[in-house]
Length: 167
Length: 101
Image (cartoon, rainbow over all chains, first blue to last red; front, side, top):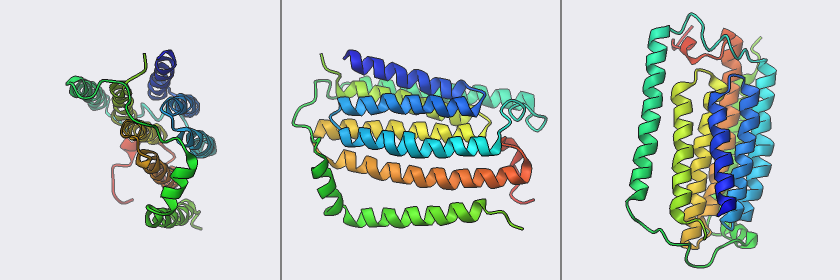
C-alpha cells in the first residue's frame, strides 16, 4: 500500500509538472520519471513483462525519440507560447475553459468509480508468466501481431517521407 | 492492506485527466504529443489492472499493442512536427490555422 501510494504520487506529480513546464526538455525528462513510477505500479500488479517493456520501449525508445526531436528543433520554448498570433483574450479564455473541462472530467470519473463496484482485493490467480503471454501472442493473436508489424513498417516509411527535405 | 482495483482506476482517471488538460491548455506541439502519451499510459494502467482483476493475460497483451501504436504515432507525429517547423519556424498550433500555404 505504501509502495502503491508512493508510485502513484510520483506519477501524478511528474505528469502535472510535464504540463506545467515551459521547457520541453524538462517535460520529456519528467515524463520518463512518470513512466518509471508506472512501471513500478505494473510490478505491483504482477505484470513484470509490461513493466519491462514500459521501461525499454517507452522510456528507452519513444522518449529518446522525443528528446532527439526537441534537441534537433532547438525548440524555442518561451516565445512561441505568447506570440502575437495568439490573441491574449481568446487564449486565456480557452485555457480557462480547457482547465475547467479537465477538472470536470476528473470529478466525473472519480464520482463514477466511487459508485460502488468491486472494492475488495484482487481475486483469482495472476498471470505473470512471460511464456504464457508469448504463447498467446503467437497463437490466438498471431494475425494482430502481423498487422502490427505492417503498421510499424508504414509508420517508418511515413516518417521518412514526411521529414524528408524536399529540394 | 492491498490496493484495490478502484485505487488503480482512480489513479488512471487522474492521469488521463492530466493528459486531457495538457492537450487543452498547452500551446506547444511537443507538449501536446507528450500529453497524448500520458493519456495512453493511463489507459494502459486500466488494462493491466482489469487484466489482473480478471486473472487473464489479455490485458497485458493489449498493452503490448497499445505501445506499438503509440510508437508509430510518436514517429509519424514527430515527423509532422519537424516538417511543420521547417515551414513556419514555430511550434505554436495557433499558427497552423490554414489548411494550405
